[in-house]
Image (tube, rainbow, N blue to C red; front, side, top):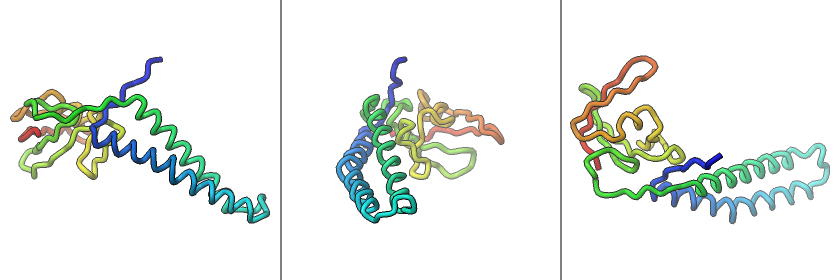
Length: 155
């Protein structure tokens, strides 16, 4: 089975790479120290700290594996001067009806964070925006209704 490409902005790639480095160099040692201290506390059968440390170790190691796979499959999308159409890496200002304009940064799923205005190109709105130009209207089928957004600006 071919590995699926993960598209990331340069910023997203660097952030995930830094997280991986931190987990490998700092968190692993912290967890190992915590495990060592918990083991030294004696009664392994009744040691809640040991159980917590093992759970934390499993989480850290799982996240390291996840990040290694993501970064191994990553293709960095360079943010270029606006091309006139929405692409991965574009910052798009849209408005729905008479509402307030909203700005979204189109990113890969691994770095999506809607609360920060970063939406995945795989999300319903992200998919709808890709390839469109300023002035275009895009339809997004939401569970409750169809929403229509007008593209005001692409950066």
